[in-house]
Length: 446
Ligand code: SAH
Ligand code: SF4
Ligand code: F3S
Image 1 (tube, rainbow, N blue to C red):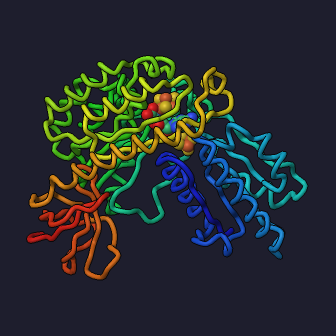
Image 2 (image 1 turned 90 degrees about the vertical axis):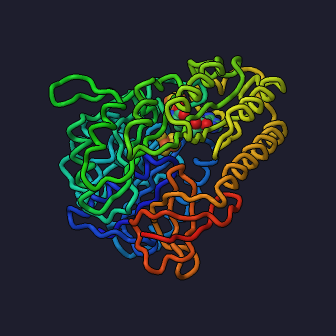
């Protein structure tokens, strides 16, 4: 078939979509970049906030038009991922033309069931939401990363989440925590590097609680896994995300000091700077603990840069709680950040809490927080003007002669005189200019 995949949400979905693509390609199906040319449409969905759901429903409306217009009998619409897992019945009731529903741990079944659907037109929609991550990775391990890879790629090392933050759907959509073995992660990483990948970002919703088995059957922590990966010939950079502050230990801080290819940047979502709110969120750390973790990392790696996620307008958040968040931001100084209005999600405890915050207050708080975070990002970037940074070039720039890449601190950097450079090169760049979300510079050597 000719398939088109659209990914919504986090990097874990990007990775899953890529692996679905590998499986389908290995069986002779052909990828299309445009839905209009395809007869298999796959929507790999996200449910983290209400807006993510809304986007899917409008895309499904367009998919139905394509299906109705298609002269082909075998036109198949698949909804995979987190909405598929959390609301299969709702999806079917509202969009009965969907042919297959696959939860995030069931996507490996996509190819096996296509034949059933094509042969038996009257078959009811296939709904697979079994949440067995071990089955998914067994299938992934059998399938080489066949399709094209970029110089910087993701590698999921852990699935699911056991933390049950009170606002979050992820434990309900991706199931319990499951860590892949060291052997399969190292083997997949080597395979990526042999295809020209220079930078790997290890993925998990709670990656610091990685606990996979090593070759002798012992549990291995994230820091040791990073050491194992650091010896792969040709791998130039390592990152990992997402970290929960409660699980960051001293071994990780030491790894940032001692592993050359481990980048000095960490995404460490704090969500709120108020102890009251952190407790209601069930985050299991205090504001003080967050400062300690930041200080510990900076003590081992003084140039470490931090980004974070924030939720404003969590139920019961007072002006004082919000001021505590602003105060935390001022004390830590982030190099970049994401911030969101709290969005009530079905079947999560916070959605039923009293004192939900009005939309107006959420909007005003988000604006103030984003102003402060933007200012910090801009100050951070400006401090690089006149300095040299090492940049991994990842793609073409907007103008000819330009290439764009990432600094060690995860800043976007545009290199102006890149005519003799290639994507995948790591170059020293002298920064001449800082604009709001990126740096601009020139290189003198390769
Ligand atoms: N596992 C990661 C976060 C995954 S979700 C962690 O624990 O940090 C990515 C981000 O979405 C979260 O950090 C949070 O800031 C935001 N988010 C999650 N649920 C949300 C909700 N119900 N409303 C608004 N933002 C939410
Ligand atoms: Fe969601 Fe919390 Fe798990 Fe992150 S740690 S995925 S926010 S439940
Ligand atoms: Fe969204 Fe699921 Fe990721 S809800 S953020 S796609 S884990």
